[in-house]
Picture 1 (cartoon, rainbow, N blue to C red):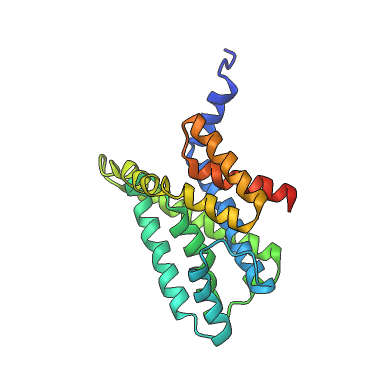
Picture 2 (cartoon, rainbow, N blue to C red; picture 1 turned 45 degrees about the vertical axis):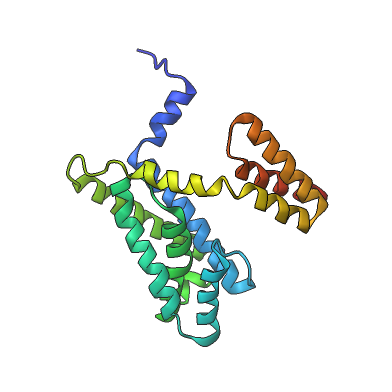
Length: 216
């Protein structure tokens, strides 16, 4: 019997596989870890907030990575345990903070220079970290009793969206202060997203990035 499913249905089936989740985590972890390598080597590229990157910077300057390793690695462990329970992996805490800052700080504190020897080894190290993370999350999910992983996703997503919808005007003002083109792009992007019934914050950010990239 021929497979009559549409491309969208096939894509949904592929994305719902456990192996696909692990592959996505591997790709994201590889990119984020490589970004930290770029920051260590060239001073730019880290996928994180300035305040958290500053912890890694302090370790690089003073040789004490305890703050970065303890803070960020703690986030990583908490989010890995939390993900299977709520059905949502916090990329900021688990990948950007944990993989991007915590594990590099831990490796550097132990004198492991190999993961940061070149861009390829950084990508490979990040991918291996993602593989382990994805496997652990799936194992936890499989052994959890039925009915435990309920309710958390809507709570976590709701908190972020409720706060984020008030950021659009601030983003527009900040973009306008930076440059006239980014300001115009932020206004147009927010207007388009408002017309579509989407969150204006995302439209303001995308609009500022697009016009800024074209004219700057």
